[in-house]
Length: 292
Image 1 (cartoon, one colour):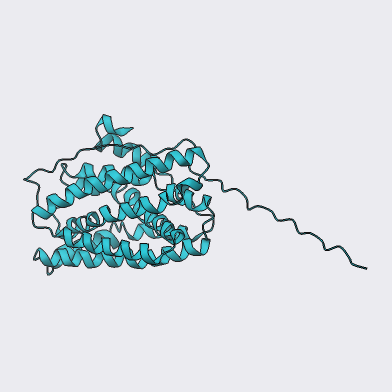
Image 2 (cartoon, one colour):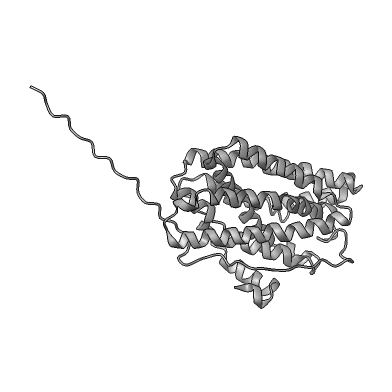
């Protein structure tokens, strides 16, 4: 006698529930920054290492932001949550403006002898390398990981400490605006990744990859700029910047606990709610027309 084979009911995975604060949609702003000809060469604390580190990061933004937009847009049609769809459109708008404004700033600095064009081409090569070799899922995981890095740097580095106050007041608003928007959209790529069922293994291993590549590129580019500026042997600047980043106040050192939280399966970018810092920064650095 043939016994009936019991049927195993397949259950759908639980629908992803984001912990992004309800109704929090990034604001797309259209700034038009101008850079004065008499801007000091070392516009952050009159320090070569600090200034050229941010210049090196700025060189990566135009190709990097385009990569982030493309990685999120690839999955946009799979998102059914109308709030997340709005957030995706705002994310794309913000990142496009970041690319545009930093392209202008990079051109201004290039004209003043800061060789950012070559650095931007190197970053573009790396973005193209990832496009050719990474699956769309891993490309999105890369975006999620870098967005965590940039949100930490924006909130804990630029907004919490006195970095903006130490900058020339004519360039500080550019960095304040960028930091504000990095915080506003920090969970969009993450929520897309989780909504489409992105692998935890890929999410975590890609952060490991980014944790090597991001500091490596930044350090190499900083050394290139310091050498080109004749400042490579400026031990006072190196020592001061290293102390600032890793000693006292140790802004990078203080990022480590928040960075490590990324590896938890329960992690969400809005576990660190920095809206109070963002509101203070908007009131301090943005004109009323851009505060949103």
